[in-house]
Length: 76
Image 1 (spheres, rainbow, N blue to C red):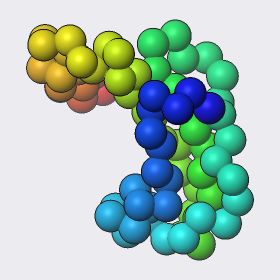
Image 2 (image 1 turned 120 degrees about the vertical axis):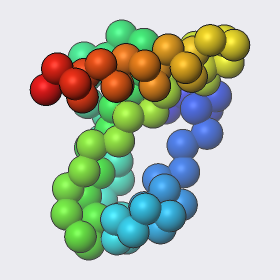
Image 3 (image 1 turned 135 degrees about the horizontal axis):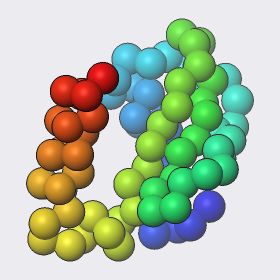
């Protein structure tokens, strides 16, 4: 894993009430800009998208990402 991501799956699961990790998170291939991991917890299986910190450091990145998610939601 790239250390610049500072991934803390245990804390994420605790904060979101996803249960405790049962297995080590596994990377899922296919992402070009960000990383996706499959996690298995005591409450189920989940996909976690880790946003690339270099991209998210750009001043407009967060707003662009939020807007893209809004458009996807409308289209679905």
